[in-house]
Length: 145
Image (cartoon, rainbow, N blue to C red; front, side, top):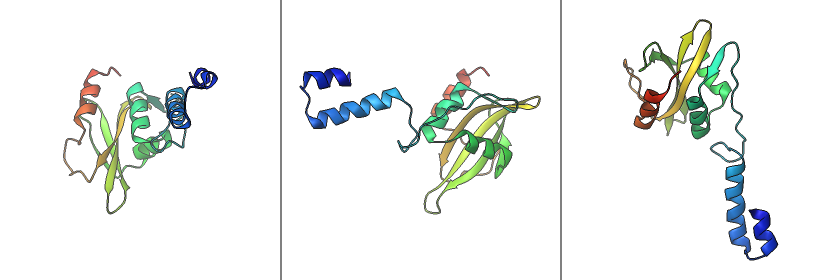
């Protein structure tokens, strides 16, 4: 599309910049800051990744290593909202704007199936149920893992 517009020479520089940004956005997937390219995690002997968690990692700017670190060394563990799942949390952000990064996973033998991950703005209360945004909760009910 960009080559076609350039060959016709009917586009000024401002419009060309916007078209190029749109093409770059569709051509590859970028993290939250637009500078780092996202690499989708691959299943291995210890971890299995659902498509849902890969989409959420892109959305919230989380890496596979960060999600694994949350599971290995959580600040808090709670029972997941889906049966036979667990949720792990680590704090993130700053003192002025604290956040929490949550991961929900299920254990199947020696393998951990990572179902979802999200950022929670603020500090959640310690309780039996974990705070999950409504849109993520709706998607989780539709996932077969």
